[in-house]
Length: 148
Image (cartoon, rainbow, N blue to C red; front, top):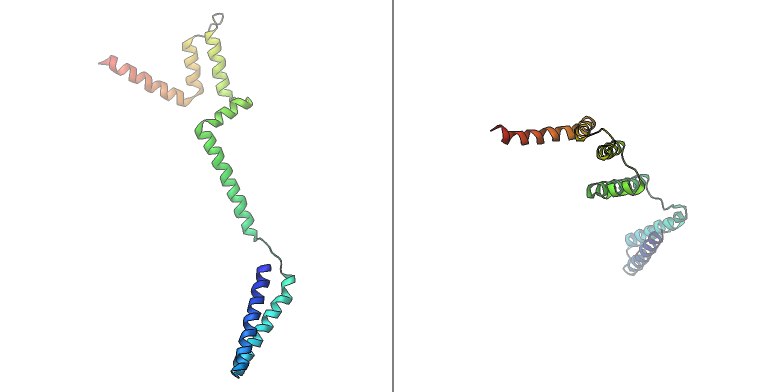
């Protein structure tokens, strides 16, 4: 609002200089125009206290949208760099399938238990379609040289 007030003062000063020039050359049109400009600037000064400096509603939405985009980008970067996994381990959040896998591996290594490597692999294949697919491809690749 200060900038509006300063600009209005500059307009009034220019209008006063124009009026003085119009009076010096005896040009009624220039004097009347300068007086009109001065009155309009005066009206701006009278209206200025009623003006509120507001941020448009859409600007708040843009700011919150930008914050959301940055938050998502941070999560993606953490996840892609592997730091997400480190954070999950640090807070003790281990997904249930990984925990089952670890339990089965520990049981397989315990000589007092009957689980062996075949049962471990079968459990992994049953729990993860991705592991099953990778296992089948690796097995096919291993059997291919032996077939020839």
